[in-house]
Image 1 (cartoon, helix red, strand yellow):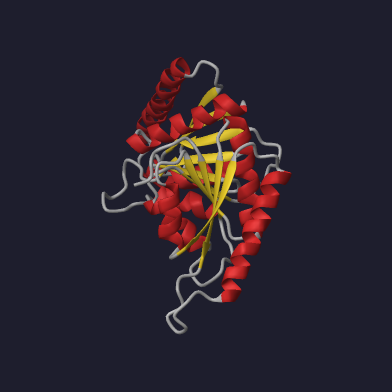
Image 2: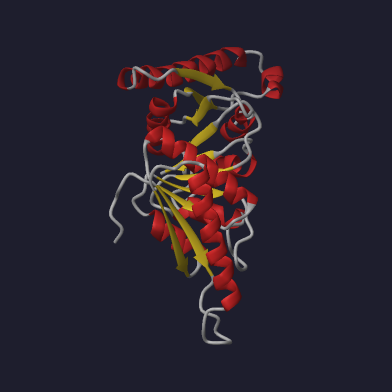
Length: 282
């Protein structure tokens, strides 16, 4: 069993997205004073020839050398590079067990079918026992704002704490966003009396997210935390806000997710469409 320790684990396959993930992990490691453990997953035993393919070994070793060089170039203070064999998702989940976060690129090319593609990052987000960061391209390169989805669930509470712990080290600000839906314009046209219901819903949403931020500000007095309640579905409002963010943080399941789902609809939508890196916290 892997012991719990403060460290960043990075899944690396040499692809451009993996390079971006490595750079993101290096910057985070520097800010939060964490070591980086790079994991390169090679193919499994080839059943047709009864051994590992020499070409795959050479490719994996080349990627290990490339990762070592990049870590040196990025001046990462403490790091390791591990070469392992097996199915990519279980190997990365094993390596990331108990880590501060498991970081992957949003896509990749890997050594074989089923490597660090979008589907693999989704599987890792569903099943890892630690926070998972999927490094997507950041639209606003100078943004210094972390967006956090808030819905009152335990997962969103942990997402807020994850964001605050990061902000303590990086100096980024936090915007806690509560996306919600209200009565539609069509319903209001049919029943003008609904205006009062909409006003109450807006006031409740504003109070809800403001109270959460007030409590957080007491716990994290050095972090700038702003509340926002927006009458748009949670997934879409977070994607929209991500255009001017450095990171979006969401819980893996929200308050309204079915118990059997490992990723709620909001976190899935953000993972697919965000315009900056995404952290998924369970």
